[in-house]
Amino acid sequence: MNVQWQAWRDRRGDRTRVLSRQQARITELVAYARQHSPYYRSLYTDLTRDFRLTDLPPTAKPELMAHFDEWVTDPAVRLSDLDVHLADPARIGTLFRDRYLVSTSSGSSGQRAVLLQDEPMRKVANTLGALRAMPALGVGLVREIAARGGRMANLVATDGHFGGVATAEFQRAQRPSRADRLRVFSVHAPIEETVAALNEYQPAMLGGYATAQVALAHEQLAGRLRIAPVLITTGGEAIPAADRALLAQAFGAEVRNQYGCSEFMLLTFACALDRLHINDDWAILEPVDDRGHPVSPGVPSTSVLLTNLANRVQPIIRYNLGDSITIDPDICGCGRQYPTLRVQGRTNDLLELQAPDGTTVRLLPLAVTTVVDGLPGVRRFQIVQTTPTHLHIRLDATNPDAWPRLREKLTTYLAKQGLGTVEVTLDQTPPQRDPSTGKFKLVTVAKQT
Ligand SMILES: [Zn+2]
Image (cartoon, rainbow, N blue to C red; front, side, top):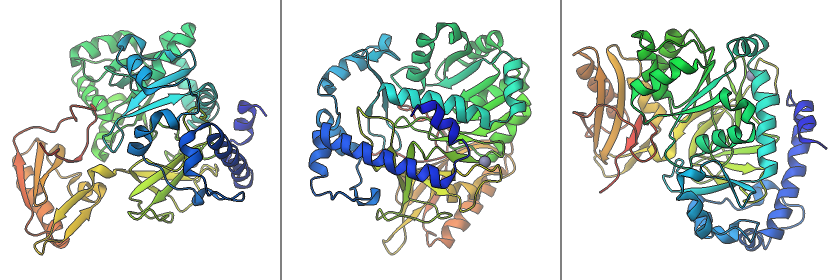
C-alpha cells in the first residue's frame, strides 16, 4: 500500500489500526536488520520468532557509532567515506552516493552521531509533514499562512551538516520552484544581518531555535524588525513560559511547540490544542526510568527509546535518545488518538548534587527551572552546575531585587531536597548558548576541563 494513502487513512490515529500497522512494520524492520546489518544479526542471535519489541535489547549511540560500518545495511557505506562528505560544507543537503541524506547530531549525550536517511524515510517524512502536521494546524491557520505567501524562515545552526539545515537545503534543491518558500537563517549571524534579511523575505512561518526567535521578538518590539508571521514553531530547546508569551505578543502569531530529533525529525505534530501527537505509526517512543524499565503515562521518564519504522539503511531500534518525556495519560480533545507527550529536557542536563552525607541527589531540569521561572524582574536565566556542591546562576534581570529573590527561592527549594549545603552564586556571564551545538539550555552541567 502506498505511504500517502496509509497516512491519510490513519489520520485520526485509530488505535486498532495503527497498532496493527506498527506491529507489521516492526516485524519487517527487524527481519531486514537481521538480514542486512551484521551488528543487528549478532545482537539478535537468540531472538525467537514470536518476539515482542520489548524483548529486543536497547541500543545506544556510542556503541552503534563504534560499529558504524556493521550497523548500516548497505555495505557500500563506510564511515571513513562519510567523513569526507561531512568535511565539505558545500555538500550540506546533498545525497551521499546519490542515495542518502546525511546529517550529524550531538543530541542529548553530546556525542556525535552520523545519520543517514534513505529514500523511503524521506518519503515518510514528506508525507507526515504534508498530510498530518499541516492539516493539524487547523484550516484557518493554513489559509492564513497561504495568504501571507507561505514562506518559512528556519533559524538554525548552518555551519555544519545538522539535520535542520541539511533537510532544508535538500528540499530546496529537489523542488527549485518552491526554494523561495523555505529558507534557513544562521543563529550565529549578526542580528542586524538577520533582521535585514527577514524584513525582505517576509516569512509567514518562523521555525527553529527559540532563543533566536526571542532575540528577534525584541527586535520586532523595538521596531527594527517588521515581519508578520502567522505561526511560530519552537523546537530544539526548552522555552520558558514568559518567552512563549513574548513571542505571541511581539509577532501576534500562534506559537506551537515541536519535538523531533535527527534520528526522526517528524516524531510529533502539534494540533490546534497545542498538544504534541506522536506519529507512532512510523516512530515508537518508549519512556524508561534510570534502570531502563518502562514508565507509565503521566510519569516523567529518565530517558526514551526510539524505534524508527521507516528508515532501512541504518536501523534505529530501541535507541536511547536520552530525553526526558512524559506521555499524557488522556486522549487529546482534538479527537486524534495518536498519544501526546510533554518534553522535560535532555538527561545530560540532569543535575547530580551532593548532600552533606555524601549521597547523590538527582534533580530533573524542569523541576529546578519551574522554581525560578516566572520570577518578577528575571528576563532570562541559566543554571550551571560547576561542581557537585555548586550552582552558578547566569542572569539577565531588569530589577536589582531579582537576584536575591531568585537565590532565596532556589536555596529554599534545595534545602527541601536535602541539599542545604549546595552553594548558589551569581555568575557574571550572561545566559548563553552551548558554543559547540548552538543550543540554549536552561540547566546545564559545566564540562570538566
Ligand atoms: Zn490533539
